[in-house]
Image (cartoon, rainbow, N blue to C red; front, side, top):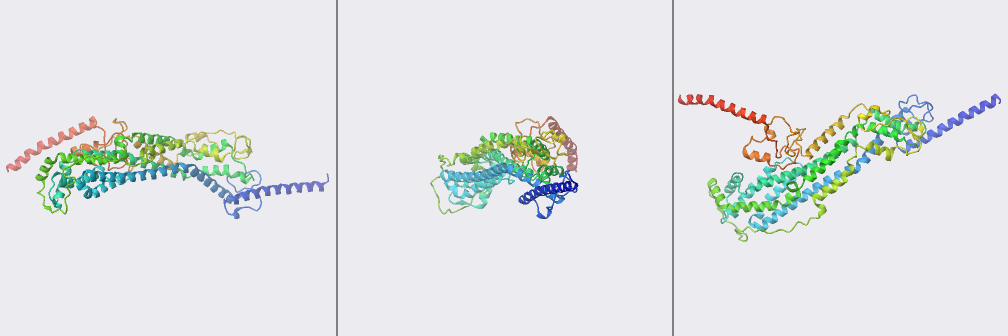
Length: 564
């Protein structure tokens, strides 16, 4: 072959090669524009050497520039975060929907309980029904605010309700007269409610039941809100530099070689995604426990801890409370006459005799509530759906690769360098510890943001399980679990803790009234502490002996002063 012919062939080969590279890069440019990865200005007019590239390096020419590589890295990060949000959207929607549904049901229960209580007063105690309507509304408004997170003292607002009720009951059913008593006398009677206890055990029992069932209800809401916070945190996870570079290499580096349609091999994808989501996988065990703990709380929400039963049964307790006051009318009248001045009555505009000296117990019609609207049914439906998401964080990386990111079995795939039949490097497991041998992503350690959300999950799980735990931020214990002392805080007891024994029998009653397994994170509820240990009893005894010794020394001095 002549030298001229050989030269012509060589030039033709070069032209064909250049034309092929240019065609491949044109396809890359189309995909770059179609996916809106960046502006057209960063696209090269012809293939380059790629010497300035940091991640998407190759032996031959490349379709990428440094600016394209930067845009590809941002796109890879965005793609993964969008995929995370897509995968979590159903779980987030489930939690958000049931938060709204539970809150709406609580509000409906408040209105129904208020209406039911007003009906009882109209039927059995008509004389005080209208004057007491505002007091009844205030009671159930306070209950509603308590359930939705307001820092209200249950015992206080229940006692305040009976404080306001006593003058009405006394004036119309215990010591009725012609006309209404003066405001001064009514206020004096009102102030005696907590002293003479005219309604028996009803106020304390009602406060107990509202606190026990209410704490369970509000803890359920608090847990769901935390679940949403966990999802929001992981949806916007800040990916490490090593992870971003690995995602770029997996998703877009093949484009630089003109390969736009191949996907990463399954094993390669698993290594990259398990490395990127290693910290998130640490949530798995605590999220599983979160779901189990919610199921445990729901199982305990019956009887005195069934909010629906307590609220819709409040009218019966009120009816019995007024009946108790009537039954003990002579004793109460004597106590009022002793402690308050005789009433000065104003002439009444009208006097009804319809319910004079009567306490008729008339059964009321059952509330027209659909069974699917009940709290119990709602909880069961919610937990049944949530149970399917109990392994969400443990299998997230695998699901993303299996369903979206990687190629199918037997299909040629990208291994980070070339298109191959299969990925041959070692595939690591989930979690941070497993990443020490990850060949694709270097994982330096735990993510502090994820650790913080894990701490919150640990805390809410202990609350949901009814365990007594040390204080954490604004969260605090309400109730012990089943009575044992394991896991109890052993810190010194101060006034803020509301420890038993520092406020007389009334304070002791408040501190011990809660039903077992009830917990919360609000300081204003009734605290229940474990029995005093021997060391605490010994400390109290030493304190008493020291006090006695001081008096022994002081009394002779006082006598000497008095003698002078």
